[in-house]
Length: 535
Image 1 (cartoon, rainbow, N blue to C red):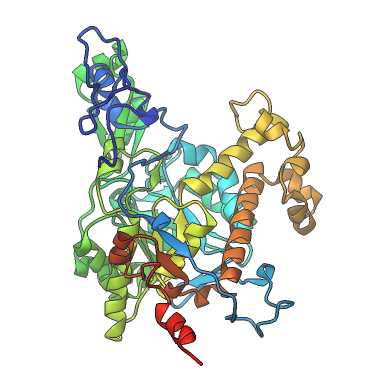
Image 2 (spheres, rainbow, N blue to C red; image 1 turned 60 degrees about the vertical axis):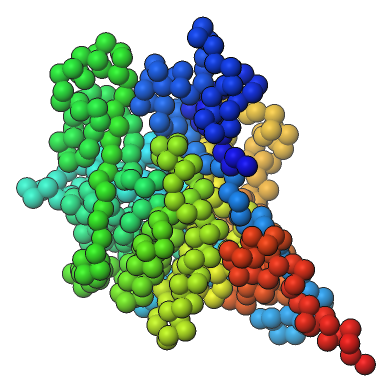
């Protein structure tokens, strides 16, 4: 069984000519020497390295479509006909799903409370994050969830100002991002600034914490979509040269005369700006965490690690335990990105389901020895309320939240496009509202089901300036919350910390073997036998 066929994909705007495709190579079974295209090899013969990345850059997010042997669809959620946890009494008039508590808390000495057990993936230096930041930042704040500012935001800022030591003294883009979230934030949620190699060299943590009042810094080891550093594309030669001077890897080398000539002739249309690979060791990790806390004044330190193997996962959990890291986010393969190499995203790393099962086993092993376990979060392709339930149940009691990337960005796109038509802003490409939106009306209060709920809380004047992307995100998260409360009520768990591994079953032997969750035909049989054999 082939799990993923290469050769043509919408992500690279390629497709096979033939209806028959060799499953392993992805090439047409009949490859003609006079074919006019457009399979991936054909296009790569013309554009080379451009075909590695999703297109068009800055206007999309990309998600892997490889079908793994086991995933979260191999689990089902259990419901019960008796009992109720985390509620005063098992009474049908009191145990109602709207009263389920979906708030969660993470953090060691300075905990953060969120209204929902979700937060955004790292929204960094890609154009799509920058363009839609207003709605995404305000939306996360209004929803009461945390927002992660990704890597390289300062490093690519056109207005970046450095001191004589090459450290950030001003970054208008980072300032804008932090200010927007804080403007809409109440007592829930937090803004987290991520750090990679270049960010560390530029002193981004010092700037964000001491100048902008950021309280949480996230160290980054990697992510589920790629095993190298972050990248963006640059379509201006002077800009490519500027980023190279700032210390980034820029390919092809914009200082090379042959490359400059190719760019001027149009053969090369863009450059890639890459971050460097990070290298870790326990002593260096511990020193960094202590430096952030003691020297800079960071209240919370989090760690983001990618879809690496058991060794790196064990290091992430063990070292985070010893350093008292506030939140460890584990990002599995199969998620999404704004700009990862497509084949890399398809073919590298441990898929999310397998990785979470590993993380649970590692955390349990440490816990049984009495070692402190950091609060854990899982990332890697989640978008629905049942995903949230399954992740928290599968990882109970160690997992506190789900990190959502592409799913939480979509409402921002939708709302911004609607705003562009209705309010004439955001540079939307929509000329008018499409039928999919017009079906519900042509005014925000008609289109968004939660508009009046927000209007009651914030008032009309505030609603007139609230980004429609924020209203769209709130509406989407309201759907997630409602669905999650229904599932939890059915499982008779009225608070998140009462979810347990016994609330899910495995539908396949493979899923049971990987996860340790009982196979559906074995689940609860001992208790059933006692009932059947009783008097």
